[in-house]
Amino acid sequence: MGTLMIRKIDDDLKRRLRVQAAQNGRSMEEEARRILADSLNEGAPAAGNAGDAIAAIVDPIGGIELDLPYRGPVREPPRFDDWLDETE
Image 1 (cartoon, rainbow, N blue to C red):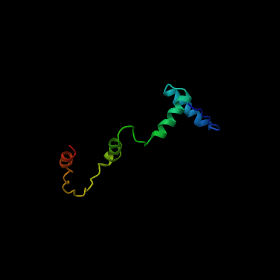
Image 2: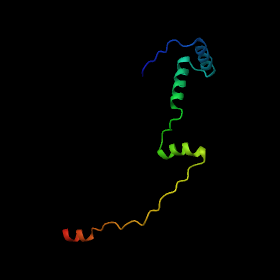
Image 3: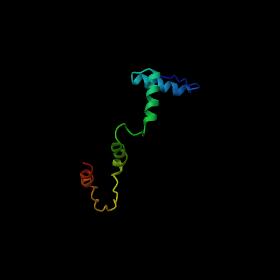
Image 4: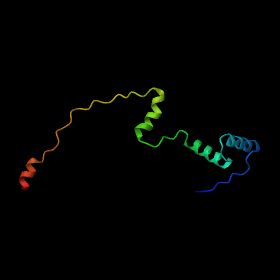
């Protein structure tokens, strides 16, 4: 793991970090790590499948209705019966 040193932090900001860390029962260093991780993960899709990530975006707005184009009948798959008979 890497190390990060932040200089010139405002005294009031440092005090508020110390208070918040104490309220959460953590060191200032751990509190700063959690704040950074939470803020960078905010809005990122949760690990999982694409469907869950899409649902997390569209469910709060009531979903999305899509007009899908008509798909005609599917063609018959190729047959290899004749080919198999010739090679035997």
